[in-house]
Length: 67
Length: 402
Figure 1: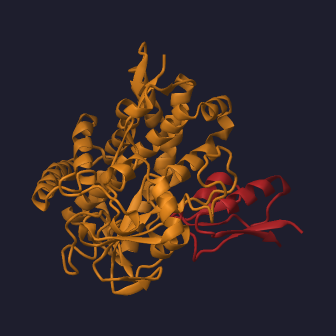
Figure 2: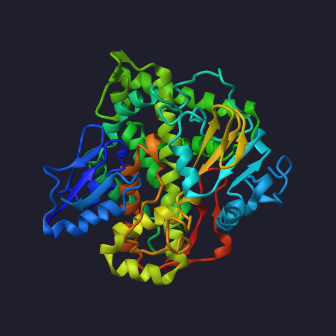
């Protein structure tokens, strides 16, 4: 099962860490808040970047899981 | 300072963030308190609390009921509950509480988004090169006073559209507001009056001749359909000055201090530019410059202590970043630290608005320094002078480059 990223909108404070680590996996709204780009499915070659984005979110807003 | 604030003998019951021992090396103090308290108290500044664990610092940052941001710099003067200009505060939105906080913040965020900041990178890079050119042919160079200090002030002056020749004036305002916190209220009023006069002149000039800069943007911005008052615009400028200059200058200086002091890390980073992204985050974690503050909004129990309405509370994000419960090897700088959820830019609603700008400045300042001087060292460790108060960074940092 592929990895999927999501961003908890209640936790995100717009630090933009995930976006700077993995710009292909996240997108920012006008207020700098992050959400998963598209479906949130993570291509195999970006799995490590997804894990790094999760491990560097100060608010624990980024969650990487299987499916 | 020494007359009014005697040296601290017990950090758990009488701490002072302007004490010489704290300024020289606060980390052992916080490590000790984390074991013993973990919320210290001091009757100085009219009563101040100090949580030192990541968990308690987070608890305060996320709680806008028990703690207010109406004042974020601990001084001898505590604003009363009705002191103007609450709830906006003197420098919105850093000194604002919800819900006003959110409106102001939304208005400013586009100016600090990644794309807007990327546009300032070429200016920053050429500024760094210009500053480094002053070291040409010299043996010794002050990495704080002659380099780091000049970068954020000139970037903010550029962002606001003020004359670059006013950068020195700006630096003097910042020093007097942020570091001379033990001055009398009368002396502090004089500083704020001088700053107001300067900013009023700039606002008038930009209203008459609008251009493509942040001051013109603020002059034309609206909240709820109404234009910003001059007081609000001045407050935003004060915010950029107190939050965007001393802080980033400190982060750049502390990072260069680390590289000058730890030659193995210097060689490793100079030889592996791909380490820069994790290294920047690790410098921000280990040497986070900013300790915020809150006022206690109502009597409450926090960390087992009984806090009273109107007490100060120091919010030391740098101490949270050194908590071994959250960061393995918290006291060590690991340039390739993979998991790094540091709180250098704060947590929660008051997350630093300028974090993208600060990160860009820090990265560019280090890249340009290392490209020009991949090898350098402290000239004399005893000659390094660190700032006091709530922003920690080297103010004098002589390094040998030749």
